[in-house]
Structure formats: structure tokens, C-alpha cells
Amino acid sequence: MANRVEHEIIGAIAGGTVAALNNDAKDQYAVNFAAGAFLGKVAARLPDLLEPAIHPNHRGFFHSWLFLSVLGAGMVKLWEWEPEATNQKVLKWALLVTGAAYASHLLRDSITPKSLPIV
Image 1 (cartoon, helix red, strand yellow):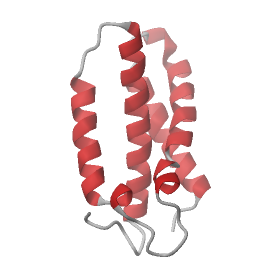
Image 2 (tube, rainbow, N blue to C red):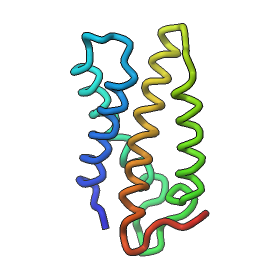
Image 3 (tube, rainbow, N blue to C red):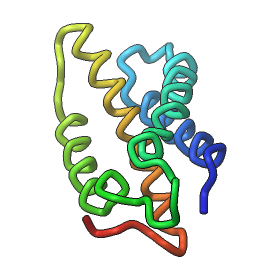
Image 4 (spheres, rainbow, N blue to C red):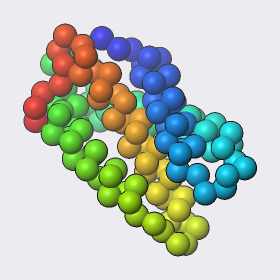
């Protein structure tokens, strides 16, 4: 089973990558990657904050294939959104980074012996 540090590392990579890809300022890739990596590291812990691993069968809705599917569909819509206002661009960036890190947590958990429940 993946531990907190492993989830944080994978979340940082996912968050940093999405942040760099969703970057309007072409000269700011490194800054965007670093900020995305930090947010991704924190956001990758969300599933276990919502459903703490207090027993072997702790995985519920927020650790499920259904939630991962809904999250993925939402991220596609979010990626297609083209905001004009600066605050909307920041919101899009933060939600994409958070979503990628959250998804990385679920995908990592999916390859454990317990995997993820359907719902």
C-alpha cells in the first residue's frame, strides 16, 4: 500500500506537470511547475483526509472508480474552459492541479491488492 510520502511525490509530479502545461506565461514554466508541484503535494493527501486509513477497508466513495471517473470528466470540461479574467485563470489552474494530484492518489491506490471499490 502506498504511504503518505509516495502519494505526495506522485502528486507533486502530476501537479507540476499539469501546471506547466496549463501555462499562459511561456517564460514562467519553472515557476508554474514549482507552484503546481507544491499544490500537488498537498492535494494528493485529500483522499486520505476525506477517508482516513483507520482500517483496511477504509476506501469509500472518495476512493472509488466512480469518483475517479467523475473527476476525470470534470477535468476534461475544465481543460476546455477558456477563462478571460485573471482570477478565473488562477481558479482553473488550481482546480486542474488539485484534480491531477487527487487522481494520481486514486490511480496509485488502484494498483494495490485492495484496489478501489466501484462506488
